[in-house]
Image (cartoon, rainbow over all chains, first blue to last red; front, side, top):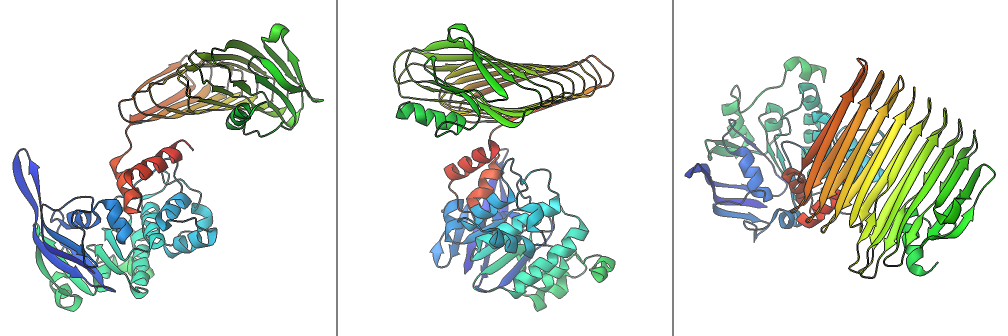
Length: 245
Length: 305
């Protein structure tokens, strides 16, 4: 279980303090699928960065499975079971898909294992396993590989920062399916996704709306989603594309 | 050969024993073994100053190994090797030099290699440089590679220097006739106070000749690297050079790319990028459980793979 207790995050801009997050508290219980939404610039990605350890809160505590992880490094949190898929997947010259999946899994992978992770995100292992994770891959391919690394890592908590960002609509329609399957197969772990997509929000157990650096509302999906439909916090997919897929 | 010499041999030529095919193993200025084959003749030049290697036209899928080992401190030599590669042959040449310097005097090997690649022939040339030993004497390698590519011939060069060479100045020149193709892949890592200078001068003189010179390098500690590549397009041709360097610590990398187009149909491209390891690359690998040092190692190993 993940718990943020009164977390705040302030940075300095030209000598003046700027509050990015203030007094953010929420829980992600085991076996739950939680979605954070809200307007752009509201502090959602900062929450993902604070959970993964890329940034450290200036106030409050982060508790993971009963342990205070507020001051732990990225590596230490990863080893405890925090997984993080970046909004902008990283490119590497010379590191291929197989290398990345092996690093994620923490042990040597058979082609069969690698294939099972890649096929779950809709990629054929034969075409991708020896491809370099470099600029020759499209945004959609990189997103899928990013998600596959989390599947290979099997973290207790998976944090996805806007999986829809930077990819075309067609690719995302297919990607939503990946999250729907992930939702249905959730076992011990929990999933936290930052997303504006109505179809993602629709499969959430709970929704947290973050705006202007604080939590505007949170609760079960059925209570929150009706308030969001039609706003930028719940973007519906193209109806024609949805029908076709 | 003793154990040190054998270990160096495996580093520079991936050899644990006498190789298949033609070979000459040079240890501390003398020959430690030589074999010619029916198609590949290795003829020593007078007074041990080098070799003439003659490959018969039409020789296919054969290899020549000519590793050089220096294991005595203070050893300095200049060696001239000339390769005559017959028309329509397809061969692999594995060179490479390893220096073990356990003493206080500098050890230096300057290998001057000239290649005459016949019409339609294909040559792959692999050269690894390696140094070791805890003496204070420097390990110095200054190779010169001179390529003459006849019509429709191909030369693919793989040049690797990952460890232990204190100072190197590598000069590679090439002239390409019509339809000739040159591919160079250089991989380089320097550390400590090492210095590595790579100079390329490629003359594309023939119509439809192509060249692709790619250097990937990592400069650590206080080391210095210079990549100086001049591609001359003197005919309708295509040329590409690329310098991609990771800089770390207090190292310095200087890239001096030059393109000289002397023909309206010469298409020349250069790409150069020098920078430290991107922070998001480290972060991504750390979120997969690696420490910062392990992440750095993975990124460098991949980059130089």
